[in-house]
Structures are given as C-alpha cells and as structure tokens.
Length: 259
Ligand code: COA
Image 1 (tube, helix red, strand yellow):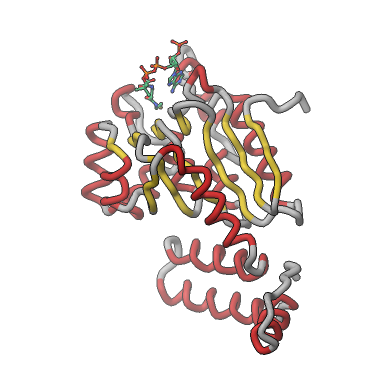
Image 2 (cartoon, protein in one colour):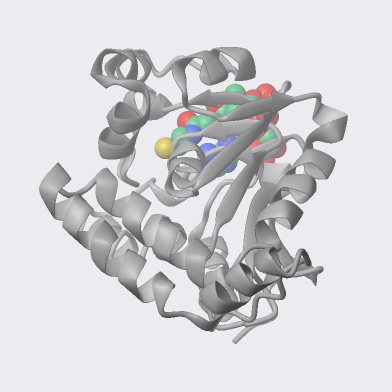
C-alpha cells in the first residue's frame, strides 16, 4: 500500500489518534483519504495495544465533507461504486472499540456523518456543523438521513438538512448533536483525558457495551433487551470480570487484559 499521508496515525498510552491531514482542502474526504481511513480502522481493530480511538482533523477543519471536486463529471454508477461497502461511515460505526470524534472545526456533510458514526462527539467552541448537501442538489449519503434524526429528533434534523445551514458548537450541544463543548485550545487535552479514562476499563466490557448500545438504535426494544442479556452473559464469563470483581474486593486497581 502507498504510504499513508492523508491520515496520520499516532499511537500512545492505549489511544490511537487518527488525524485527517488535508488541511488546505479542509480535510475533504477524497478517494485516497477514505481508503487510508478504512485501512487505519482495520489495523487498529486488531491491535491489542489500542483500546480507544480518536478521530480529528488537521488545521481549521474536522472534515468539510466529501471532496466536491470528485463529483464533477462522475456518473451515477461511478458514484455508486465509490460509495460501496465498506464505507468510512460503516468502518467507523462497526469499529469494535470506543471511538471519540474530536471536532476541531468545520464538520460538514460527510464530516458530520462520520462524527455521528463515532461513539462520542466532543467539539471545540470554534466548530461549525451542518449537512449542506442540499446546496449541491444532493442529499446526505453517509448515513446522515438516518443518524441525524435519531440523535436530534426528526424536526431538528429536517431543519438542518432542508436548509443546509451551519450551526455553532453551542447549538449542536443544545440539540444533542455533540456531547460536550470545550475551548478550542483545550479540545485535545479533554479528549485525551476522556479517552484515557475509558482506556482503563475492561476491553471486553467496552466492546460488549458498544454492541448492546448500537443495537438500541437499530432493534425493537424486546430484541435489544434479549441481545443485552446474551452479551451480559458473555461479559460475566470473561477473565476481565473475574479480575474486576477480585480487584474491588482486594481494594486494588484492576488490570484488564481484554479476555
Ligand atoms: N470538497 C473539496 N474542496 C473543499 C471542500 C470540499 N468539501 N471544502 C473546502 N474545500 C477547499 C476549497 O475549495 C478551498 O480550496 P482552494 O484553496 O484550492 O480554493 C479550500 O478547501 C479552503 O476552503 P475555503 O472555501 O477557501 O474556506 P472558507 O473558510 O472560505 O470556507 C467552508 C469554508 C467550509 C464554508 C467552505 O469551504 C465550504 O462551503 N465547503 C464545502 C462544504 C460542503 O458543502 N460539504 C459537503 C459536501 S457534500
């Protein structure tokens, strides 16, 4: 594979930080960037040293959406192929470890959609979010029409998608599109603090929590509850559970191995 230049991967202290690195194009997602991002998720999925991932952007944008220059002259069939599985949205969504979007700036279109496919969204107070596809005569195609209503409610989602307007971080927090807003210069420190606290937990428990919680927005309640019960049984039989309970009783910090 060609050397990854559009996505920088930094690993340390059980946390992998993926930085989209096309700052002069506001980190717009072109083909090579999408491929690098999918490959990075694939690599991190099986890296036992990594317990939490962080996705962010270089410069003044998180991701300003799909690379619009690739749309010109592309046939519907070309576009269909470009959007075929696995997409970056599917790769982020199916990533089996916790993933935090550190939204440092423009978070538009496919950028907002990939942030919504992450587990937690922490935004800088300088961030601007929106689904501007309507302005190009298209619609969100990375899961936005499905995830946005689930996160913020149908009316608010439709307002954002009908108008294509950008909203600021405080408004995004108010409607539930992001989970926390922090001053721009504190964003990465706050995200790392959160990632570090999650990274100390049992990887088994984290993976099963994620799987059960994802089911909650996809499955009918009874099906989701049955799924939770099965996953609970699996967690209960893990080495991490034995270690967690023993550590509590012995008044020490647990050492989770992810088994
Ligand atoms: N695709 C391709 N290039 C993009 C891009 C995108 N989605 N978003 C920004 N860029 C490029 C610009 O064309 C410009 O390139 P240039 O320097 O070669 O001309 C560069 O990134 C900087 O962007 P610019 O528009 O000059 O920055 P700005 O601060 O004035 O405006 C935005 C920022 C985000 C408001 C504006 O770039 C924008 O509207 N981008 C498109 C967002 C969008 O519609 N995304 C959804 C796509 S489906």
